[in-house]
Length: 333
Image (cartoon, one colour):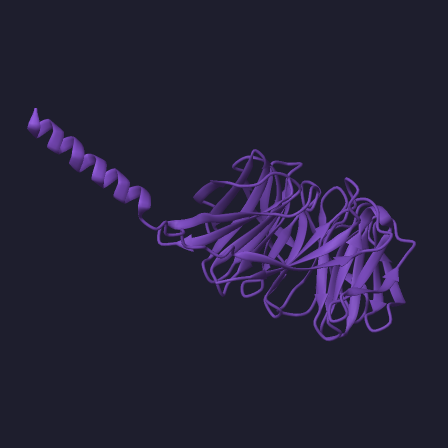
């Protein structure tokens, strides 16, 4: 009996000591993205599509598809400084650094050229229906535009004319250029394929089966030799070998994504989603793992990561009583 009382007393003393001990707070782990600024887009309604950066004039160009406009955002002043209006569903935008010009592709099949400094019109080309994503080939400065029922137009920006057309089996969504090998990787969700093309020869050299459905965002990482694709059905990030197309990883991600970017400095991926999130993945020894899910705004599925500014820009549409805006995130770590 006495032994039992001694054990009970010892346990009681230990419990009181634990209750009276100071509580040590858990270490605070910084989020990998911090919202630094929100820049309003006054009067912009409807869906917002792709973005591009003008590093000379420190401006962000925003294709406000539902608004029929392209917004020029002065990042130094934190406000819209110019606007191109009267467009039919502007979708793709690209700033040409060597020429200081802006290229805009729109749903009416037109590709328009503007003087970047004052947004004055210079010229336009008619491709066909549904001109969409725009990329600039770093190797030669040619402008590549996806359009129609399936094609990439390769444009000489100096002559402002199409110099070659690469035919595809369906409308191209996101595509990425391997400048060193003059390859292009193209998402074709309508055909359930990823096409590999030869830009110099303007022809498809291979087609790859998709892992899931609705393959929209795409990224090419030349250092790792990988092509990364985000699917919407289901919401998955799939990392593949650029050479063979073999899957390396297949990871769950946020829903309704439209953009995917690499932060090479931190070895991170940013996936922006219409679900109102940005998923941040970080590279580890075994591959990429999700580091965090950052809240944005419902419908904010398009974005742009600018390594030169070390900022992620997320386009938030006007929805649920909130005005349209650009959310500026600063990476940490």
